[in-house]
Structure formats: C-alpha cells, structure tokens
Length: 474
Image 1 (cartoon, helix red, strand yellow):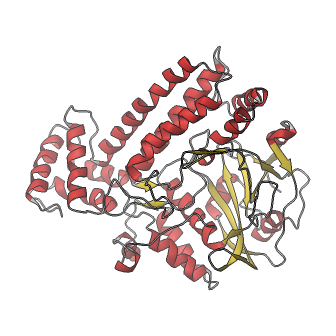
Image 2: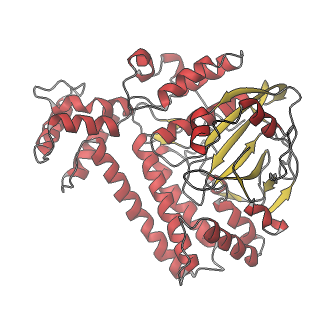
Image 3: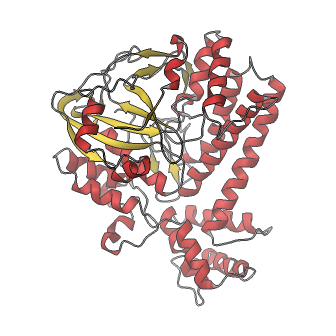
C-alpha cells in the first residue's frame, strides 16, 4: 500500500527512542489531504480514507515501527536536559522520487517525553503548520510538508477548549541539533558517535565518508543551516522559536510554531509574543543560526577538536552572505555581480524601513521602477534617487526589459502567508468549513502567478490583523 522502507532509526540502540503505539481518535475524519504531495510520493492511488485509518492507528501496518525520539536542546539560550517527542511519533520511512523521507505523526498522544502535556495537537496548530509547509515549499525553501490533517470531535484544553487533530508530515529527517546535545550532556560519547555515523550512512546525498567524516559532516550541517536562514531572510520569514531542538541537521525548516512572514519591513520584527527579549527577531536569525551551530559543534566535541570546530564555524557567515546576496540580486533582476550591488540592496531596505513599506509587495512591484518615466510606488526624494541608481545599474545588464521583468516575477512572490489568512482559515475550519483552506492552498502553492481572482490575498493585512499575536501553544 505504502512504499515503506526499513525503519532504520528503529535499529539504533534503545537509548535513542521509546517504541510505542499511539492514541487513536474514536471518530476521526479526513480534514484535509495533500493531493500534490501524494502524487510526489507516488501514493496518489491510495484512498484518503485508507490513509486516515493508518494514521489513526486503526489499520495496523506491521512495517511501521512507531517511536518517540529523545533529544534535549537550548530553549531561548538555556539548556533543557530532556525534551523529546512529547506528542509526535516517527512512524517509519517512505520511498519517493527525491529519496527517502520520514513519515511522522504529530498529535498522537502521550509519550514518555510529554512531561505535563496531553500529547495532542489542536486543529489550529496543524492547519498553521500545513499551510506554512506548503507555502515554503512553493518558495523553494527546504521544509517539512504535511500529507494529511486528521480531524476529530475530541476536545482538548489550551487557553480554551479546542478541537484535537493529528498531522501526518514528511521530512528528510527528524534528527535535530538537540539529538546530539542530549547524548553529549549525558556523557554518552559513544552514542554521539553512533548518531553521527547513522547520519553519514543514512543520508549519503548530503554526507560523505571521507578521511575526516565528522568534520565534513559538521561542515555540511553548518553550510545548509546558513543557506536555509539566508532563504528565510530573503522572503521575510521569521521562524519564531529557533531553539536547537527545532533545528534539522539537513537544513530543513520544521517545527512550525508562532512563525510569521514580515509585512511592513522591520528588522526588529518578532512574531512570537512569548519572545519578550526579541531573541528570535527577524534580524537576529542569522546570528542565532550560527549560535545554534556552535552549540551543535560543542555537542560533537568528542569527535571534532575545538580548533576544527572554529574553522568550520567560520564558513557560516561566508555561506550566509553569499547566498543572501545572490537571492537579493535575483529579486532585483540582476544577473551579474557589480561592486555597488550591496549598497543598492541596503539602500532599498533602508527606504522600506523608513517608509514602512510592505516587504513582499515592494519587491514584487519593483518591475515598475525599470520603466521611464518612473511609475513605482517609491515616491520620496530618497526613493526616487534610489530608482535612478537602480535604472543605471540595470543599464549594465544585457537582458531585455521583458526578460528582466519575467525573471523578477519568478524571484519575487506576489503572495505570502499573512497571519490573518491563516486565522480566517482556522476560524472557518473550526466550523467544519475547509473550503477557505483549499482556496488559500491554491494561491500559496503558486505564489508567483497573478491569480487575478484572488487579488485580495496580495493586499496588506486589514487593520484588525495588524497586531495579531501568535503563541507557542498548540
């Protein structure tokens, strides 16, 4: 039925996980199904109801070996000794055209790592994770993706009573920086090594068996993390909770909580109302990525010398800066590198900040600034001066104006996931109406297209949604 692979993680020593079943819903239903992802996984012929029975645990597949993974992590800079999958189960691995992917179930009930939680997820949180994974994927940013939302009539209490739900999701891996930290801080260097060896063996597309396998492993993780965060910055994405237990060793975005896509450009933007100090503000994400890589390096200190760690960590900034510069050049429609590009990019960001311009819409509308006379919304004297520089810079390019506009529209999305959109979808879904979710997914999975019939999704958020706060509670 499913193209399942042997569950390699389940073959690791018992110290890495707890094998267990999950808590089924009594009256489950398919709330939403990712038909696009089913196609990519080659399971489009599998009926949604059958999939739901598997994810609900009412149809048992012997090849699935559900387990909750143990890990620790630094949360807001403070080390927490044991975290682990408090409401999630790693079910196994599936084959796909793009290689093996983990199959994971979120909201599956209590585990030994639930602490005081009930092990459930709420419909609100799984919808937010579902839509953001699809939005990020459409922006070509590495991410986990959800395969199905399983709804229920079961109620759980957060700040209020809410509908419980489960999310079946896929990712290249669920191994985190905190997975290594757990064994390091528990003085188990043999398990740090076992986990590193497992990663090198299981993910040959990323890691190679070289004369210095652990140094090279760490270097790849550092580079992929730097690249991922550069992609976040370029599209204005703020993760909100960049704890080391939320950092994938393959540089995939996952564990979506109180995320937000920045609207008016503000480097100090904080999307998580619990982040009172602004540790995970948009402008801090590049530094926090490096801090987290340093924490991982420390966890690997039984395998990698401090000197080698330092040398590898020095590659982070170069990777980040190079990736971000290339992304911004594409957003400005520039094919070739010129010495003045950095000043041009920063100049635009400064204007956006001072004039409180919408980040996504400003970049999308930049094609208007290619024309003479100027038709752009950038109207201040400083902005007009910038446009002259922008036009002069484009005069050094060889592409036609038509081709440049096409390339810019392929680099600058017209649509991003604004928080109010997710909230409207959630409000409707809590009244058993999933049609708004379907419409939003249609737009977000093709964010570079015009979608004239859905123009409202490109507009700035309505006034009521300007200060919409998102919490970690899910």
